[in-house]
Length: 164
Image 1 (tube, rainbow, N blue to C red):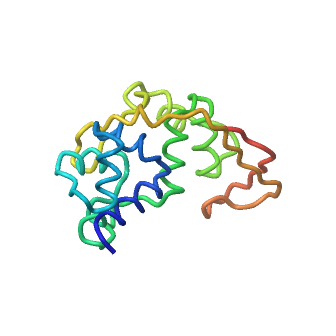
Image 2 (cartoon, helix red, strand yellow):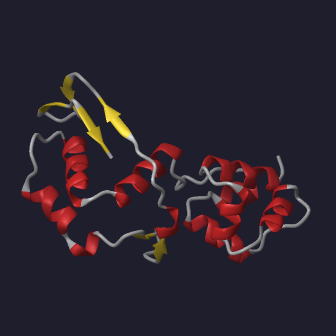
Image 3 (cartoon, rainbow, N blue to C red):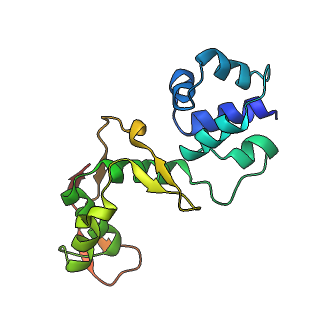
């Protein structure tokens, strides 16, 4: 498989159209098409930008997946978490930690101003990555109707319906 085909595969895995992906990398749709058709090769600056939005550049170049690349479902969870209100963030943490009600630990994490910059994250090299352009208005629902352990926790919780 060629660099262009792997680039297209990564763009599609991340859920971007050619124009949006090109816009994120500050290039044109025509350039994006040329990269994906192997008519031209993307430059390092382009690859750096798309890495910041989740593309596995190692895979694009070599065909070998990076161990740091997040699966699509984890990218979606992170994206939705970053868009959520503090109340929803608390509920998500409670769900993952198997808690029945908010506690000081979840509230202090969510309400800490250093943890709540919209669209900002640190990458593995402690460089700030701006993902604010990735927000969308989609509505995701998580439904469950049984009582059970969450992530091996000891607390039992019942989840009826939670909207994000």
